[in-house]
Length: 125
Image 1 (spheres, rainbow, N blue to C red):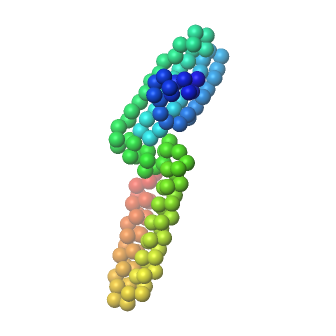
Image 2: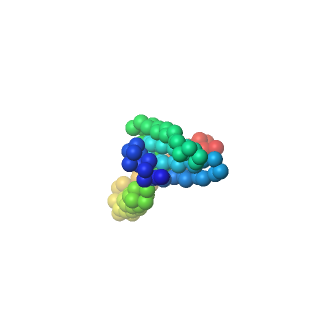
Image 3: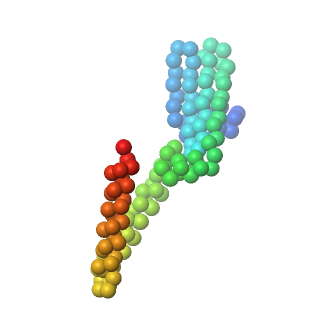
């Protein structure tokens, strides 16, 4: 059924849900900025299909969060986070070797940390 829907309607995205009950089936596909739901009547074999395209901003948002993107994209996001953390930490280490810059650099780092923590504490419920 899943492959039939993919071939017939050009559905993309990963299979998110396949639910079967006495009267019918529900097949759900999800991808970045995309969703498709097929409701199948088991007695007659008829189905209705709804596809939702949420636009470029939704695609970018889902890619940023790694939502409905698959394993490869999740690995890429994690690798990017590791590289950026490494770059940040080496920048802090190098800051301590610059005698004229380490005090102002440390002040800026502490001030930035305080701002981020304050925004987190005040803005996140």
